[in-house]
Image 1 (cartoon, rainbow, N blue to C red):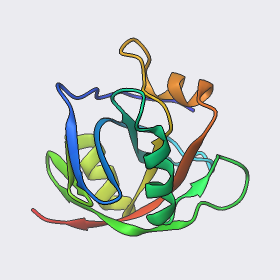
Image 2 (cartoon, rainbow, N blue to C red):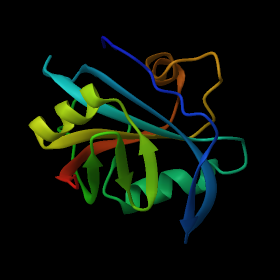
Image 3 (cartoon, rainbow, N blue to C red):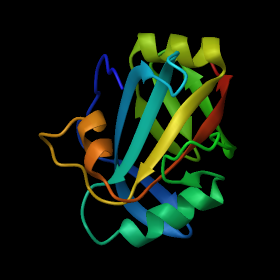
Length: 146
């Protein structure tokens, strides 16, 4: 999977709501999807251990599928609200680059991945996905907000 950039956020993004109260770290990047087409990707991971059990059930509740097999990716039940420099999913607000936003808007969807363990500071999103054992993935529809 070719990756053009990895946006590790400064600080943590907080998501407040049942069934999870955790700090999340996000990475947004542009890479090829399974079909070789350029796609906007978004990875959410916990900032520290202890929140892993809550993230994957949350992802399942959003309609994401377990793992990354060859099955078609499901469409999630949540929507990504995108403006030129920000994406919001279920109250999680994340800064993104204009290239990412433009691609997300043009394709009308984002590939959302939720990991089960913290991502080390020195590991990019693609490296994380190559080593993580459990994650959830799906397509999220995009709505423009500005």
